[in-house]
Every structure is written in C-alpha cells, then in structure tokens.
Length: 235
Ligand code: NAP
Image (cartoon, rainbow, N blue to C red; front, side):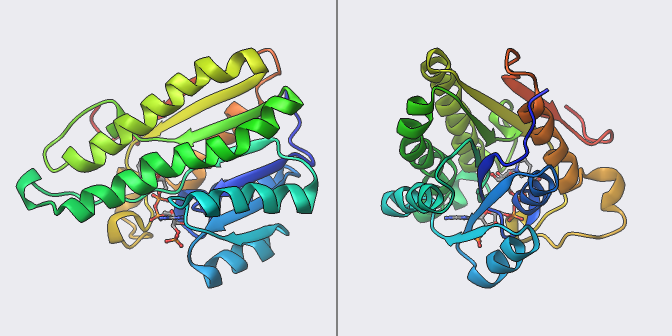
C-alpha cells in the first residue's frame, strides 16, 4: 500500500463539494494539502481545517496554474499528487446554450485539467514518480438529453487524461480517472443535504474514498479508471 503521510497534494475545486471532501480525507491520511479554487473565504476555511495551504486561482488561467505549482513547490519543496477536480456544468437543449456557456465548461473542465497537468508534469517527471487523479464523470462515457455541452467537455477531459496516462507512465507517473454518477454537492447551483438525496445521490465522501483507494494502491499497481454510482441510478 502507498502511504500518503507527508505526500504533497494539490486539490482543485477544494472550496466545496467533492474537492473539499478529497482535501479533508487526504489530510486525515497525513498528506499536506494545497487547496485551490476561486472563492477565497470558503477556500481559506477549508485550508485552515486541513492545516494546508490555500491558493486562490482560476484553473482556466495558465498563469494561475503555474502559480499553483510554483506556490506548492516553494512551500513544501515537492509535489506528489495532483487532483484535477474543479469543474462546472449546466444542462439545456443544445439550441438554448450560449457559446459563452459552452466555452465556460470547456475552459474549466478541459483546459483547467490540461493547464494544471502541463504545469505539474516537469516536476513529476524529474522526480520520476507522481500521481495525477482526474475527477471526470459518468457523463464522460454516455450521452443524455440536455448534456451536449457538459458531456462534450467531460468526454474531452477523459480523453486528455487517457492520452496523458500513456505519455506519463514511462516516467513512473500514474494517471487515474474517477467517473462518478450523481453526487450531492453544489454542482449546477444545487443545494446539497436534502434527506431524499441520501438514496439517489453519492455523498462527496464516497468519491473521496475512491480517490484515496487509487492513491493508496501499491506502487506496482495502477488503477486507471474507477466508476461509481448510487444504487438507484441507472447506468
Ligand atoms: P461543486 O460543489 O459546484 O464544486 C465545484 C468546485 O470547483 C468548487 O470548489 C469551485 O470553486 C471549483 N471551481 C469551479 N470553477 C473553477 C475555476 N475556474 N477555477 C478554480 N476552481 C473552480 O461541484 P462538485 O460536484 O463538487 O464538482 C466537482 C467535480 O466533480 C467536477 O469536475 C464535476 O464535473 C464532477 N462531477 C460532479 C458530479 C455531481 O453530480 N455533482 C458528478 C460527476 C462528476 P470556486 O467556485 O470557488 O472556484
């Protein structure tokens, strides 16, 4: 098993939802966690709780992505784990989407993943080890009505990470992708915590446990993909 104690992990989208649960669980395993998102107040609160570092950044901005990696290295002197979790989604018939809304989903979900991996890779390659984890979606592997823009961005994020796995493995770097079904978070302006969602949705901690599982796999084991759904969700 890989011990996460003192491993340095960047978690994007750590201000709430799945990212917050991942940051909390990794810190509980002894990792040093760098929390990244745009909402400063929520982010600082999470970073304080996990005794980690808060870096306010927009993952779709290349300079911000470089600053996140640079800030991590100057604080901890190393980088072991990169969790590309930040994401946005909205759902509508194709003709009702504005091109701005389309761009927003691709900027955060696809370009955000690309930019952080691009910034982190030279350091992971130099160390000849590291682990990149992408939080994709079951919408990376199936289409549905109202899901054109989000689905296209999540298919693309999955493709980026899938191809990167082939590039990274010869350098000793693992790339794992998690594909959750419905999760009870603030996603798409939802309000989490309604009692009826306990059966219909996963909890953020369920996804965080999946991330922990792939990270703790022994050094010789690469968990490439992991999909999870609530029991009630059709797949
Ligand atoms: P959430 O509660 O809305 O959280 C999204 C997180 O992403 C927030 O911390 C948000 O922080 C951050 N974020 C958004 N845009 C950002 C940007 N430009 N730069 C930096 N951070 C940004 O949603 P969630 O459900 O936890 O979503 C996390 C991931 O899970 C996403 O990739 C989503 O596609 C995926 N997912 C969600 C579900 C679901 O049903 N909820 C299912 C499958 C996959 P700020 O707004 O403060 O920046």
